[in-house]
Length: 180
Image (cartoon, rainbow, N blue to C red; front, side):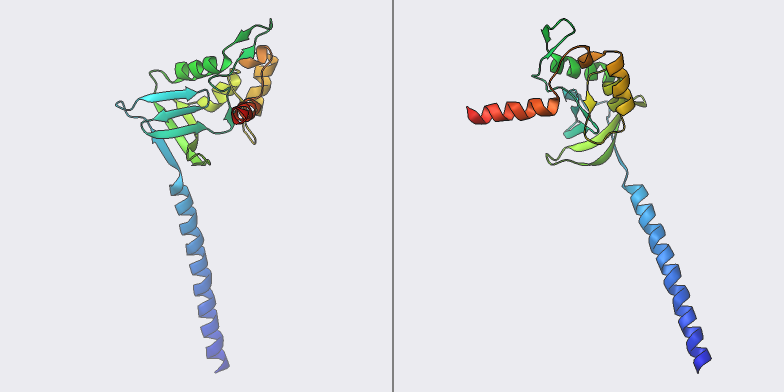
């Protein structure tokens, strides 16, 4: 009786272990399948909103890990003269995507229901290029710190002079709007 009971327990233990392995395998497969991409078709227009936001068709995309000057934002160049750095950043992104195949890897959605993505133009990382060219800065936890360091050293884009951090600019703008 004891031996039969031991065999039954052993059998159940093996089944439990096997089912756990299968469950883990199916979970990993599901995670691998969750990676989604947005790819533009030839009929879909890509609209650049600013240096870190765009629309492909009806999908709103925010470039993850970067923060570009707001479209209405101005900065000072190396001589202290104001220039429209927000418009310049948006134009730079437009130039990077013109006549190229665009695909964006979706990471998650933000609180504004935009898809946070790493986007590529002909397989070149747009997020990294915007930071490397000084048209955006790293945002929160980002993989683009080395690109920002290079842009700062070379005084590219907004690093050529003085600028307000885009996050602070948004905060000040919303605060001044609230007071009016």
